Every structure is written in C-alpha cells, then in structure tokens.
Amino acid sequence: MTRALALAAEAAAAGEIPVGAVVLSATGEILGTGRNDREETTDPTGHAEVVAMRAAARAIGSWNLQDTTLVVTMEPCVMCAGTVLQARVSRVVFGAWDDKAGAAGSVYDVVRDRRLPVRAEVVGGVRADDAVALLQDFFRGRR
Image (cartoon, rainbow, N blue to C red; front, side):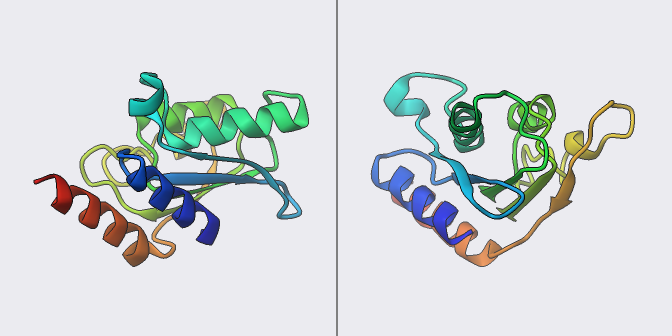
C-alpha cells in the first residue's frame, strides 16, 4: 500500500484524482503499477487500477492475472471491478471506501457477486486514513 499511496500522490501532483494501484504476484513481486491519468491521456479508462492491470498483463505476457493481488488506494468503481473480474485478479486490497461509487462492498459488490462466474477476495480499509487524507487534500484545493 505504501507504493500505491506514493503513486496516488504523484497523480495529485499531476492534477489527477489521487488514486494509485499496484498488482502483485503470488510471491509479492510488483508486476504492474498505475495511477489515475485520465486527464493527461484523455482516456476515460485511465483509472489507476486499469493502468496497473494493463502493465501487469504486459509484464507477464497474458491478460490472465489469476493468483495476483491488486492493491489500490480507493475502492474500485464498477468499471474497475469489472476489469478485475475479466482479468481474473484473485484478491483486491484497498484503502479508502467509496461511498458514492464503490463496487467492492460499499455501494455495489461486483467483485464478490455470487451470480458471476468469477469472484475476488476483498480486503478493505487498509491504511484508509492515509488514502482519505490524500483525497481530502486534493478536493479541498479544488474548492
């Protein structure tokens, strides 16, 4: 989570919403990293989670990220949760809960929906205070 928080701070410095993500192998090796870059790239899918999963897939040469863990500073949205399932990520660890658009247990629970053929383990609230502080500082500066 330390690396993901650093990436979130980089995003904030670039004028992006401060969210950072890291994909880890089963042994804890970093396979991919990402931060929000939607404004910079004009890409609506430029969320930290998607950027990190793309990098991890390139690194291993496969879209299938089974047995990996996605660590992200904020609870994934519906798009990112769907990407987690499509990529077969086994575990999602996140910091701040997203009470407006979260899809890993707060508003929706896409990643653990038993109606779907694939699910991921979820661990929420890891270093949540640090992640929330980054978000609050960013939005305070915009108001």
